[in-house]
Figure 1 (cartoon, rainbow, N blue to C red):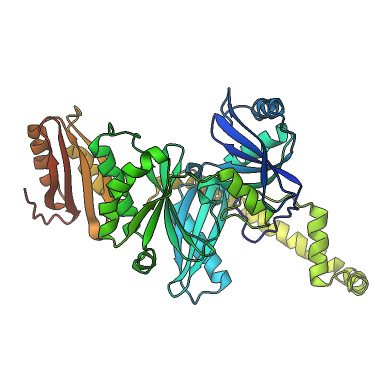
Figure 2 (cartoon, rainbow, N blue to C red; figure 1 turned 60 degrees about the vertical axis):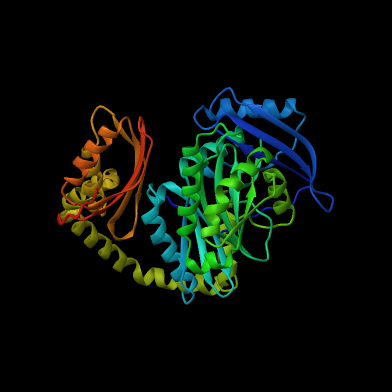
Length: 471
């Protein structure tokens, strides 16, 4: 079933110590904090390379290895905050109309999640970061983590005898800010774009892999990274970009200068400046500080464990049922005698009706099961699939021409960049593509080198077949 945590109470009490576990598939970093002072203090820290996949292995095996590594490091704290890599979460940014009620906002976010995420909503755990920019509007970022992954992490924690107090993503953790600002953030060997408003996130997007820390990185790699930064920033609403005058770099010192040099021209065209702090944020310290202060992180995927008895008791107390229990019980006794005969006749009638329609219901249920199994093959954007087919047919089978990136823009505009072994291979590919049905306005935007040739071209996908292709 689909799980959303936005309305559930977290049920976490502050403890004198907390363990922050920054996990990867085959590695984790554990940091133990003392929370008794004004600021969390690091007691112990340890990094361990796992012998097995944290999620792919048996939970007992992975949990036992985790427990032994913590004990070897001298860490005994059980209360744990688990930080996942940002790439494990899918994010969907949504611009929320200002006049919507809370119920309508929830419906809007669910519709956007159904459209954006590649999984059925019953197979994920959802969490939403809400934000507001004064004078601009309301925003939300819906995060989704597969339910199977959450179950596996919880099973590993149980096997390691840990008591999870929170489960969030590393790249979303940030310090409170008075004004909206953008951050290009390093996480492992990747670069993330995080746009933070005063009370939440407006955007959280992966950009790509960081180039090497020296000048040996190919120019094409740096140009591709700059292009991706420009594309992601241009997807932000114009009113939001106007409020963000500076982008902060939070990467390693060896790469800060190179990124600042490569990205400054791109950001200058968007009326933004760039500033390198030279520091990668301490994820464990941010998580411990938020926990110690009782602040909910932007995304929280830990499902609270509430007993059924407590849920029923709280529900009855909230509705005043305990105070009216005696009256309800008396009325129920009187009604039971009067309705018993009617209920029996009604149940018999329903049973007879069910026997008449049982076969038809079985057929409908089978159809629904088949639809659910094949739902991923149904895509309303058939035009996009047809365009991809025509573009793929234009590439030679032998691999003389290969694509590096493909971007679908509004108004059916397509941008494709790639590499050809020779200029003649590219011309043949260009000719085949220009002759493809539905390809119109073919233009070469960029052409570099001879052997190989780096190219970037654009065309308009026009299924009606009106072509005005250029060289």
